[in-house]
Length: 260
Ligand SMILES: NC(=O)C1=CN([C@@H]2O[C@H](COP(=O)(O)OP(=O)(O)OC[C@H]3O[C@@H](n4cnc5c(N)ncnc54)[C@H](O)[C@@H]3O)[C@@H](O)[C@H]2O)C=CC1
Ligand SMILES: O=C(O)[C@@H]1CCC=N1
Image 1 (cartoon, helix red, strand yellow):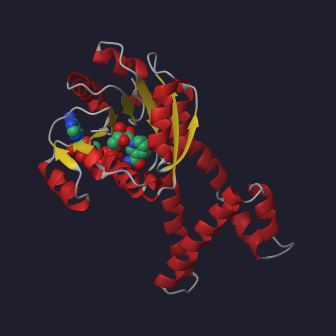
Image 2 (image 1 turned 45 degrees about the vertical axis):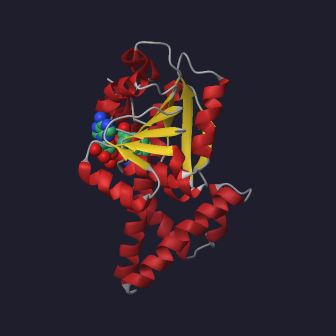
């Protein structure tokens, strides 16, 4: 078995689905999940994957359980012979995981996000004390199968969590709000949703595929004395920019708290 995913919840399944979609053989993948109902769902959704209640040996284990269960599941994965650990839990440090395992096993900590499900994830990784270049390359390859991966010092992972780990939820809130605004302006809901969601997708592609940054792209939409300037004035008047600064700061702070 190449990879054991411990915790088949929202993030564990997003990574599982993304890794299979990227071409990994399901027979090389196992998921350990304590909930019988979740196990049944996972088995139906991902035929060929070994779905079990408790960890089985694998080259590496990816921990996708809630932060409070990371120590016990790291120990359990190490005890059955998993040779490396990749944790995606918010806040839990590599040193806490190493202490739980109690012997020098390579540990890598990552913060991915749910767009991994469609190969459009954004993840950052940091090595623990016993993780070398090979272990980072292993974690990078796993996460690159489902999106982009950057390396950061471990102290930056709380900021990453606040920005890109939690970030999809901020964007979904914006998507909901834009569609609602279209309905308020008189559009049928299905048309408002199509236009709002495609506007987000197209804008994200301009940001990631072109050379212009957000300020230049914004300026190109904003005609002098026109409609966009009137709309942007309202967003600034409602402190949307400050709200994002506060949201990312609060989420990063919460990540720090989760780490104790
Ligand atoms: N949901 C997200 O967007 C992201 C989540 N994360 C991290 O991923 C982790 C999981 O989060 P979610 O998937 O949202 O939570 P979740 O609650 O959807 O999934 C956790 C799963 O782990 C299972 N579980 C609990 N104890 C277990 C054990 N001992 N052995 C096997 N399975 C066990 C639960 O039954 C559940 O299905 C968290 O640590 C979170 O910080 C990281 C990045 C993004
Ligand atoms: O909300 C959370 O705690 C997790 C971590 C990043 C995204 N979801």
